[in-house]
Image (cartoon, rainbow, N blue to C red):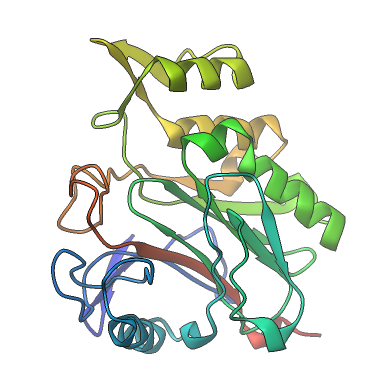
Length: 263
């Protein structure tokens, strides 16, 4: 559901209880100048860090979440998972494409501009996770490996997971080459339904592919919130690496356990 609070645009999922703060943020409501306009969270490009800090401050106020303590990772399109266990090291940014924690008031998140963000909540054990799933991470099963990591760290079972899939570039706008098709086929064999031939390439639906992986890993279908919204088609709302020609910002998707989860 698209919402706006204090000028900050974001999507919230009805799948999560009130004890979980979360949001798939849009690009709307920040202070960053073009081409990073305006709610950019990415420090890697030329957008000044003062803008990122102000964007965090505004989003934190609008969503009642401690985004000044946001934990993200240096995303490398792999299958590494960062486990946050120490509140004194919340600003660490190791190479990884997912982050999980049981800490309260410690938001974890990923940054995207076409790739798929996935938010996970295990209510039985009080744990959350955020996943960055591009085609490479998807081919490596990053979302399933994140659930497995939550299982090892917290005792999470797939059937207890609540999961929301956020905005990503849809198959309407996402054409890939033979190399990607070969990698996906090597990982999954059958590509019917989420990859179709289109001219000299293939249209890939990474959202549908991740949803199928979740269900195959015993996440209950009714526990998955998946309402596709294409970042390229909706470029006024979302950053899109392809639509913006490779020079753009990154929107934040985050999840956080509120303190009243304790005890």
